[in-house]
Image (tube, rainbow, N blue to C red; front, side):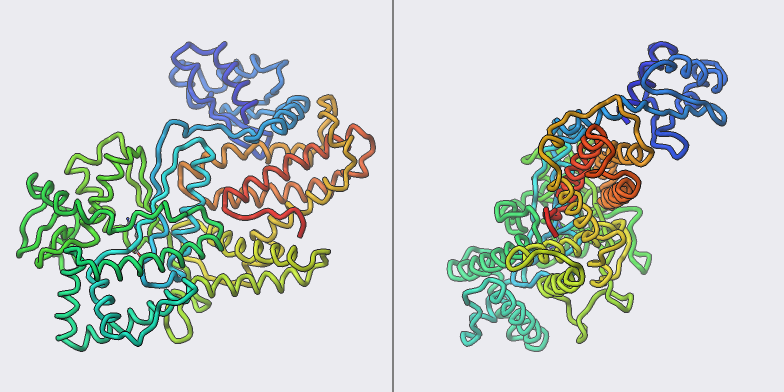
Length: 576
Ligand code: ARG
């Protein structure tokens, strides 16, 4: 697209006055030609010319150059790039690590808040989307040159830990300390539930749990020691899952709720002093004109509860202030369930009133829909419990094993095992990313691991297949530079143009925070590759020159697919 953009920009410079010639040339991919520009329509008014006349003037300027044009409709320019230019671009991109992708986010800092599981509880299906979408955004924004700070806002603080620690203390027979972190957290999850039952039934336990909360908050050594053990075991278990999922999160990215505990009082005081938080029945609240509860009464953000305790809202306010002041973020993304939309709206509005969130900083809730079970209702186990993330991944890996076993392959042992894992885990991540964020989707393993259709496995196969072809090519053919004098076959042209769209696609993903655009792009790239194989023999091409050019196209496609899969957080095995 750069080629066509530059050509139109050049023509604009010769036809238009300076104040207009530096505008966006409005070049887009097109069905009627390689590209289309409607810049004549958009600028005609400002020049006082009819659009068709301006379009004709631009066309005359383009004539004889590398980009030819025809006119259509009320003033569209249909643009076709000449073959030599397109081949030259293929050659140039093969010599460039970045595959033609720019760094538009250089010099910006984005904080991405994602995953955020709760200590002493197992990660469940509800944590899948935030973890997978957040990881993809981290990768894409970093690749586009952005400075990205990962923040895992663990639920590691609050009255529930008083309850759990008290219960553990009263039940020495409940052995949760074991070798495997996953096992430990699974036991803790059960203890948590048991503690909750006693809490709901026994007022005397409620009182003992309350005292334990006070002990935790005032830094009682023995209580804190148990809390630290809980955090350490859970963090280790989460890390096992992150590693298995292949997401970039590490323990260093953890900045849980407890991190902000020391500043909550001060943050809330600042809001109260400024008159932003006001007393309401003994609680400190922030009110909003446009936020009311089901009864029509104002529904405030509670920053300090009646009993003096601080909760999720106060913590998020302190967190936001920290990210603006200390982390110096330009943009803060919260990849959190759509059900928390109101919470974030109120937190951001409060921070704006407090003057923390100013025009130079953007805070964005990046919401997503729910993972549904086969019945089209939120995914639950048969007994109605939450579905453990680890079990879900096990099931997907088994599904991939069956799907791949059906296909002839020459892999065995550990190599096969690695591919099965890459396909199974990749299938889950891809299915999640390929759905537009706001939509719910049904968790359907058979569909996720299908070898055909818009799936991760299909793309991994497309990549492995082109790698296999490249593996069979003689070295001298791979070393031959691209011959720019050869005519492009229509299927070659379609593939070159598909490759050309990588940069624009990544920019769209970053602007809209929609990973599914990258999935759709890679899927259409893989289809263009299949069409190309069907029409253009590669290893058996008619001449050495044609073969070398086609191999260059294969190499560039393989690298673009591998890079694209990597940006989604999927592996791209060389053989499958
Ligand atoms: N722990 C929270 C939950 O499970 C998610 C945290 C999201 N991030 C935030 N800054 N509130 O719902």
